Length: 194
Image (cartoon, rainbow, N blue to C red; front, side, top):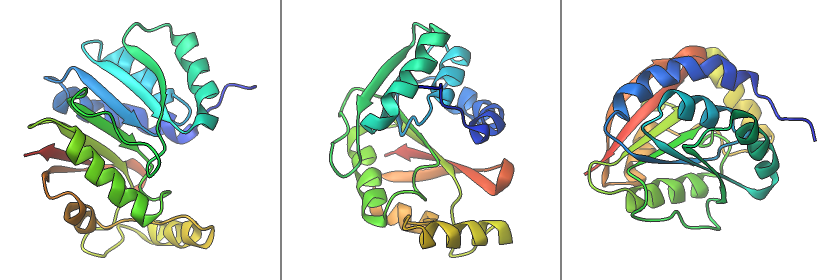
């Protein structure tokens, strides 16, 4: 199997890391929901050596993640756990941060709701959830390209963009602390568990 590669991951890993350096400075263990290719895990673990980075995803992505981890040879990133939102529960009381990129617009709405609720339940007080991707703000798109991409996703059977207010309503113990504007009309939302 060829090692998977995502150009989007290459494009956004630098700007995301700038924010993660700050918001994860006092954290120790991060669970990544939807590690995909494994590129983000390797990049962030290499640049944030104080963290233990736990990858996770559906089984079909594990071999690609293993390839990225093997090539990187990092001591602070862990092999993927099997987590499919809606089928598996997140491990509680083992992480003080959760990270997820480009998952909410792919999942169905009930899956995103489950993710928000499970993250809120699994995080300790003052734990953080770093959520990257395209989102609506008060029902509005940030660009015409985002509107077009959302329509394309929904036409293909994906759940489409979620509104930040909708996400908040699904996890009342998470408060949004930051909305960071990122390249390609994406946002990096920083939630904190109260």
